[in-house]
Image (cartoon, rainbow, N blue to C red; front, side, top):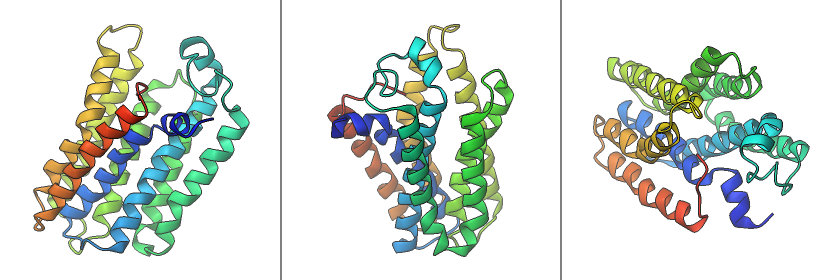
Length: 232
């Protein structure tokens, strides 16, 4: 598998939205812009990509019928190898939490939600909505845990809003084949998640946070173009 194909397999451009979640939570809680935050953001990207790869491995049979161009159905990587890649990414994503004890319960819960989302039966659609929404909410909460204020009212509102948005987006993605606009809505929303996170960044006291979050947006768009990225 070529490097560009591997990046597309990981959905690397969308992985930057996970880093934006952590930065938004940190901004709300008044966290410092330091190495701990950088590691947490990098870990969030690894966890996102690990969850994506595990999901592809679990959906290999279905994707053979509906998304034959993806890496596993097209034979670029086996489902078993994808599981090992996913496990490695989830492990790497969890490592920063070992240096940040306040995040360990949140990261453990996040990994649990990632795995449960990926392995639950497709017919249990409400479970999928809950676990996917919880993944993004917990991701933002991991950023909040790095701050000095921790659970302010604003932090609680942001986590609830993140859960609701992603649960709704997951529902729309489930309508693919029923609603012609569903794929476009999902792709467009994924492209707007970084600006959405930047809005929460403006709620913090450090004016650099929203600028740093927004800086991830052209990087995401550039990676999409570089990888000729089309898969949501």
